[in-house]
Image (cartoon, one colour):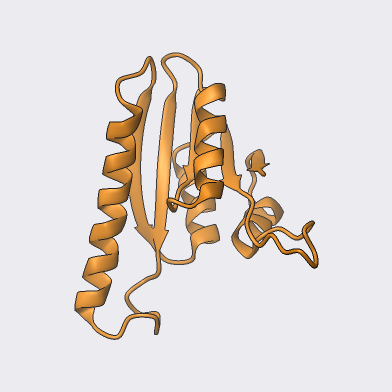
Length: 135
């Protein structure tokens, strides 16, 4: 795979997805780490300072992860977008002509462990690119 997008939020699932991407990316390829934060208009932010803090944390998380990966035979790009996570993952994958989207599996439950998280399910359902869900 020449260009792989990983939906990255710092969770265990995202780490597993990233590790799989590191195994699959070709030499001279490009790995894209995408973090998506809620838009400012969403009611999850009490004030603009809370929004700024979330945006800053997302940028720092991506930067740290890229530094941790270090120099490789492929390029690494970090992107932070705002909006609906699934929509942004699909949009960025299309815009950057990614060969593969890799996401961690979410929503694991003892009651229904077969259920995907809502973001993963929406991406699998609506993306026009291959999607890999990592457990």
